[in-house]
Length: 84
Image (cartoon, rainbow, N blue to C red):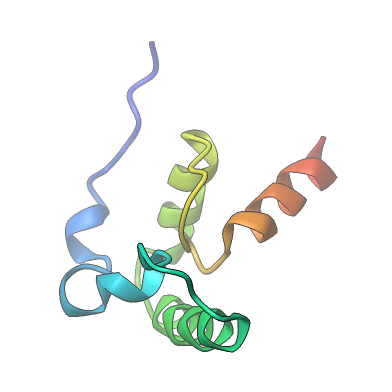
């Protein structure tokens, strides 16, 4: 079994007050609200010092939800399908 590196997580900028931006709310979200939330989350990812490690982690564990490494669920699926 391969151990997945998680040492990057404590310095990720998505932790704390902004974490709600990276996952959809438990209630229904309109398209414009989702797009605005995702843009805000991605802007945090752009300046995050561990964005590459975050994306590698999400792909390695096949994370089905949220924005990881600056990519949404569908963007990660597209990247994986192009790689195959």
